[in-house]
Amino acid sequence: MKLSAKKARDGVLLVLPVVLGCLLFYALPFVLVLRYSVTQGVGASVRFVGWENYRAVWHNALFGRAFQNTARFLLLGLPLILILSYAIALLLKNEVERHKLLKSVLLFPYIMPVVGAVLIVDLVFGEAGLFNRCLIALGAPVRDWLHSPASFWVAMALYLWKNTGYSVILLLSGLSTIPADQYAAAQLDGAGRLRQFWHITAPQMWYSVFFAAVFSLINAFKCFREIFLIGGAHPDDSVYMLQHFINNCFENLNYPKLAVASVLLGIAVTAVLTVLFLWVRRKERYRE
Image 1 (tube, rainbow, N blue to C red):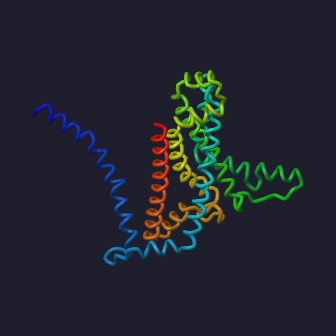
Image 2 (cartoon, helix red, strand yellow):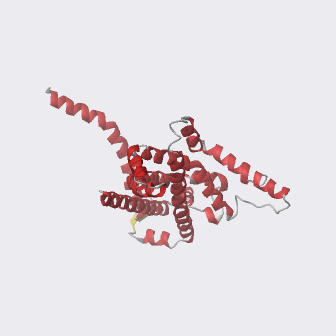
Image 3 (cartoon, rainbow, N blue to C red):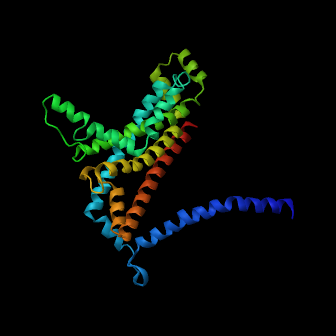
């Protein structure tokens, strides 16, 4: 066997398990979801209904509530976590090398098990939690933080606390790639911190911000785990998310609705990521 043929065979054998795994666990389920989204019935009674399932889901009141709550959570959470993590990264960019333990501290909430995070939330916001004990000590009426509209802000605080540190690490990595002599030259020219940030830091951080936004978006959907453990399958209306709708459809074996919601969610996430990527590319092209 020739050496080139042997290398080609070895290469195919090397990537074959990965390709088969992707086909089995990603491509096949994706095709099945698309099939379920345009059909109804099971077994021999399956029939093609086209866009009927999509219209039914789009006009479903529970789906509308879940869609609005998810959009609200993302529209508030993503800007907040990016602004907060960016500010912390700028404050700590000169301290990380001197304090190696700082990175571990920042990542501690991120790597904490979901159950541990939920226990902390219950310890602080539960009926007998820290907040209500403080209200009792002040003579104020207690509040059900986890089963009222306030649960949305509890979920938002949990999301920021758990994921800001990871975004800070990503942004610190981007800040470390900016040459220090650029700041030194700017200082010699009399540029203040604001002008240094606007003309040196920000233009070279777009891709770092993009990756931080991508991971923050992914982590925002992962926050459903904590919300589900706190409020159950039917939480307060303010934190009823798309993942709740999908999970409830799965429990009820309503595969057409589940598939349609999954497809619409995938389209929405892809659209957000595409807009972010094109915006960053435009900024980078402008800088060049």
